[in-house]
Amino acid sequence: MSNLKEILINKNICKSVWFMRQAGRYLPEFREIRLQNQNFINLCLNSELSSKITLQPINRFNLDSAIIFSDILMVPYALNQKVEFLKNHGPRLENFNLDKFLKNNDLDFIKKLKPVYKAIEITRKKLNKEKSLISFIGAPWTLLVYMIGVKQNKNEIDLEIINKKKNEIDLILEKLINYLCLHIENQVRAGADVVQIFDSWAGLIPQEDLNNFCYSPNSKIVEFCRKKEIPVICFPRGIKKNYKDFNNLVKPDGINIDYNIDPKWAKENLKDTVIQGGLNPKILLLPDEEIYSNTKKYLDAFKGLPYVFNLGHGMLPETNPDKVNKLIKFYREYQ
Ligand code: 1CP
Image 1 (tube, helix red, strand yellow):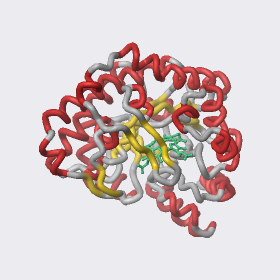
Image 2 (cartoon, helix red, strand yellow):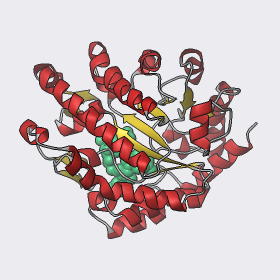
Image 3 (cartoon, protein in one colour):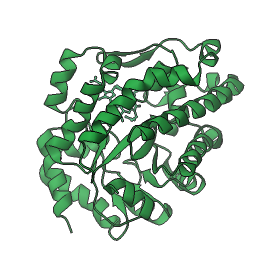
């Protein structure tokens, strides 16, 4: 059995490291491919290239796990909502239309995502058996934020729209849960070992709606994974001390902490799970000694516990790959 998968199932105390956005713009070999492929969705649909990009950080750093090169917004794309990635602007989605959304069906959805499954198949064949291949989805709430366009800026959503459309939102979330479970099942069937659920905008949910928009949808998906024996890691980014309730209610095999969570607090409050991540990606922009001292905080706090080393959010595009190499070396040699 492969490394990360085994840690999640058996709660082994075993060294393992991978990074969110380990494939991407900080790597010159990715930028070279990206330059030739201006349409990001088409790049994600190119199975050979997607597999090649997935393996770039493995070949460069010998990381313990690979995460398939794709995007959480491939799901709205497969649900026939137009998605574009504009240069220096991020994603832009076509206006949401409920009738159109409700006309989708499972078969067409899977058909549109076939190239992702093919990329997983190709990658699993090329990847060393000891390494896990991670698949992922965006959590229903985080996808909804993009799909109905309620994000006003980096840290705020339009609560008025949310409150006005509660019934519609419940319906969309329910439908998304079904499609997301289907997407997980097909990724695992293609050869993925683990799934990570990115709830990147969970931190924007008002306290009183956390159950409805975050805990409950994540629970349903984790429950599905449990039935299918698929190891699952959750990442409810930005929910602060609610991480404790999340962990107690959702009970994922693993939980990625963000960089606002104190590792000592996490150790005391997040029980019966494998903790992953935490280090602020900005630390990688600092001198070596500061990288090492900040890394030690996490490694010392989780000593004697199963802990998967990772970041508290994705790698920044301005990261120097040499620093990443030094960080991995430090982690592997640290006792
Ligand atoms: O070259 C480019 O311009 C594209 C940059 C890029 C990359 C490399 C985007 C656009 N997506 C990706 C790949 C990606 N996205 C992966 C690949 C695997 C890996 O980690 O190496 C993964 C797991 C994601 C997940 C993803 N996409 C999330 C969840 C994680 C997170 O960052 O919070 C989110 C929110 C997205 C949406 C997205 N995709 C890309 C952008 C610029 C955004 C928007 C982010 C935002 O709204 O701030």
